[in-house]
Length: 341
Image (tube, rainbow, N blue to C red; front, side, top):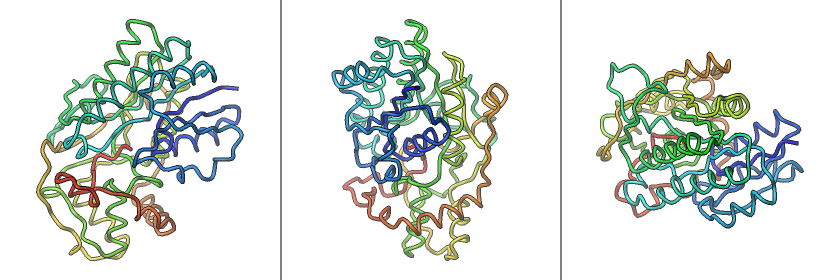
């Protein structure tokens, strides 16, 4: 039996990834290590909590003693690090938690993996480490320079570089993925698409930063999870793989699309002051993972949005989860349009 450690598995991408692995790999056993911050929710995994091939452990990846003990007990074959502080506005207000989890926590995991001889370490990163693109710039490739523009993306870039150092210095079999904006079920309502849907369903104003022309490349979380699975199994150690669906939308167009699908008026759109250092455009060139591993996105965007709207209608508790509008945060007046966690 293959033993896999998934960190941050109670979050949006992590919970979808665990569900995918349990379905696709009947001979794999998963331990989910999650600190259960505001963004982690065990309700995300209610349908698998009694699965004999799944175990949940509450804990912090930056806790060296806990992580080392867990590695000794379980003797993992594989590690997928999805644990991260991921909200850009929160990082602007207070970078410290991002330094602790995203940098120190990653190093603690890398060291445990090195000491205990794991077969593959997957670092799940973000296209935000590349910085921002202009309107006519070609999409980011794996060779694009790292130029982060927020404390969040800087912390993820530092973690990626630590992973590279462990590969080069110690020979640890590390692979890094950098994905574009995710959407799908179980996403925290502080993120952009859930906020649009939940506010529209409740006839509440939908705040949009600046003029709404910031562009994001959207991918369904299930397509992302299939890619992570492939990279974990077949990705070459020391390599970076970009994951994107080639589905660029500016923010205000996305809001209008969702309002049309729900049948709500565009008068709900409310433009607010832009945030500091707001990246203009992200776009991913995913040709490497497509050619090397045979991955392709399968989801049709508008059809998936309609399915997601129906999902949120059936899971009303998401609207009650703490979101930036409920926090004493001057910068968090708008939903997060960098949707990774």
